[in-house]
Length: 216
Image 1: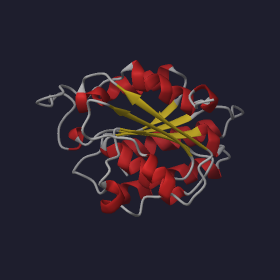
Image 2 (image 1 turned 30 degrees about the horizontal axis):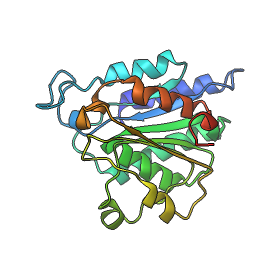
Image 3 (image 1 turned 90 degrees about the vertical axis):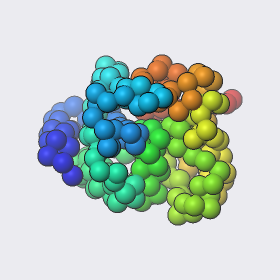
């Protein structure tokens, strides 16, 4: 865990120990590209990853955001273990699980799926964005969804499809489940920017407004 992330978590825990107990938290887990590139470097097809701008959008919507720029092509499961430890720290400081949401884009979405599996807490909220392919059922059989699950993918993106098969194969409790299919025409690049098409439903989900997204 980097010094920056430790400080962010420490600040969040201090804040949670005050009289204010209604604060909501988002753990934001970014895509793979900026693990090995600076924020100023452009993806040859999708341009700049607007990491700071994405975080700012969540903060502007009232969330305490815990995030860091990963480096070195991290192992998704191993990284998820550290995120679970941070979530446990919040839970141990009397933050309700329902106030915590893990949002992951692309590789970050796979890390978030491991967090869902390892934490095995049906009250946590998750948003998996552009992070499921049909081959995952064979290649990553250990993933087991648990929690309130929102998945978002784009018709033009070859790296994201419906994750209904994973939901149906999961044996842990899933209290709310919803999928949103976008059609931005941006391919995998739709997650490089804080587009309202995925930011707004993520915010609603993190606020516990499941009924506003679920089919009636």
